Each structure stands twice: as C-alpha cells, then as structure tokens.
Amino acid sequence: MNQPNTIVEKKQLSDDVFRFKVLSPLIAESCRPGQFIILQISDNGERIPLTIADSNATQGLITLIFQTVGKTTHLLAELSEGETILNLVGPLGKPTHVEKVGTVVCVGGGIGVAPLYPIAKAMKTAGNELIVIIGARNRQLIILEEEMRAIADELIVCTDDGSYGEKALVTAPLKRLCENTKKPDLAIAIGPPIMMKFCAETTRPYQVPTVVSLNTIMIDGTGMCGGCRVTVGGKTQFVCVDGPEFDGHLVDFNNMMQRLKSYKQHEHNAHEQCHLDIEIKKQAVAKT
Image 1 (cartoon, helix red, strand yellow):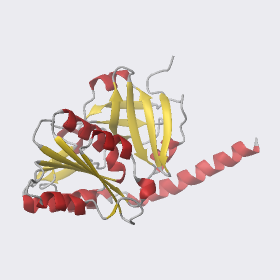
Image 2 (spheres, helix red, strand yellow):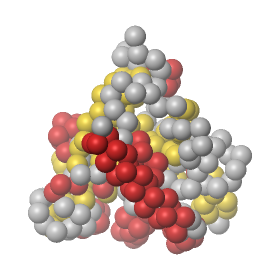
Image 3 (cartoon, helix red, strand yellow):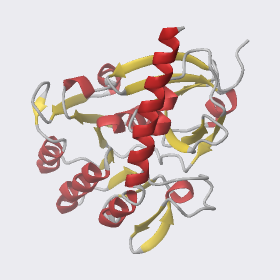
Image 4 (cartoon, helix red, strand yellow):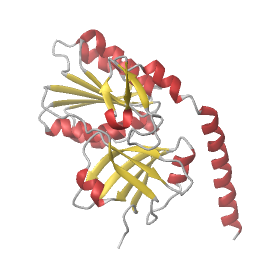
C-alpha cells in the first residue's frame, strides 16, 4: 500500500514540464481551486510552492505540474513513480472566489496554464460562459490544451513564434474580447509576472475586473517569514495568506519583479551545480 506523498503517476508534458499525481488524501479532500502546497524533497533542501493543478478526493490524489527552472524542480523531476516526497504541506492560501458572473475569460501563459485549469473548471461549473486563452513561446510548450478544450465554450491558443494557433501574445485576443460589445465580466490571468502585468494593463481601459495569481519568493507559506510580501493598492500584502490571488489592477508588478531578482545569482549557481551533480550521478550509474 502506498504511503502518503507517494508519486503514483509521473508524466513528462514537454521538454521541461512534468506532471505528478501524488497520494495525499487529506489535501485532496480539503483543497479548493486556487490553493497551493509547499514541498521539500530533502532534509536540507529548500521549500517551494506549487499550485494544486487538480485533485481527486475519492482516490486521494493531487496533481502537481511544474517546470524545471531551478535546482529543486530539477531534483524533483528526477524522482520516479513509487518514490515519496519528503515533506508536503497544504492546502495553503485562499481559494478562488467562484460565483456566476456571466462571461469569464481565463488567460494562461506557459506553466501558468496548470494552476489556471482548476479555476477555469470551477468557473464553468458555476454556470459562467468560459473563454480560455492559453499561450507559450512555441507549440512544444503548450500544455493542457485538450483538458481546457473539454471545459471551455471557446479556446484560443497563441504561440510567440506562430508554430501553433495564433501568432500573438495572449494579450492580443484578450484585447479583442474586451473590445466586443459584450465584454467579459471577469478576467483571470496566471503566468509569468510580465504577462500578468500586461494582461491587467490590457483590461484596465475597459474596466474589466482582473484577478491574478502571484508566485513570489516564499519560505514557510504561513505568513511568518514575510518573504512573499507584495504591494497591492499601496499596502503590503503576503501572497501566502492574503493571496495568492489579487486584483491585477492594484498589484505593483514592477516592485514584485524587482524582488524576484534578489537571489538570481544564487539560484543560477545552485542550478548549474545541480546539473553537474545529476550528470556525475548518471555517469556513475552507467559504469556500474
């Protein structure tokens, strides 16, 4: 019988994006769209937040989708089915406020499509007309297209290089929708900070309420460390307990993006060392 935190399914969605289904009955039973977990894969390892991309309370499973962008996510991707994640805490953060408002447009950029999926599904279940826009640099990086297509009234796919769907940034179709006589009643944008910033700027002139989900520097996830602080409407907020969702028109994205650069060199060094350690380990295994 599998132990809690066991990886029961592992799938590679693209070159650097992985999907894990993890046995975590208590989290699966209590989590809601928009919430996240914090995991740690070794005693001395860092703690990283990952949004719960889906859950199945009956099976006791939560779905985590992540991109290998740093040391910990690369080490996480090295784990196999049947192995366990050392520490996994959640659900954390405030759930998405879900209600019937009319037409909801959900915009996902890159890996941001993963946390957007349960929110989009909940908005559709609440009776809203659902329009989904997903985008990435190229076709290989588009994720969850079929899952989104199954729940959306309309799905728009964009790629920066035009290799699939529209050759456009996600803000282009978002602007078109806002210019319609029947503009969206709500926009939800999740993705890289710069993408969320420009989504909010796109909807601002049309006075379309816009929610963004922030992923900042985070350590404990309970509001104690203050590392995840952001400025929203001129006030300090903590992403882990006050968010992760905020009014996109009030977030100081420039300040947030500057703070995200604080440990860039440390992260780069750790990432490079991680690659080296993994390669050494593979060579050692090959020799045995």
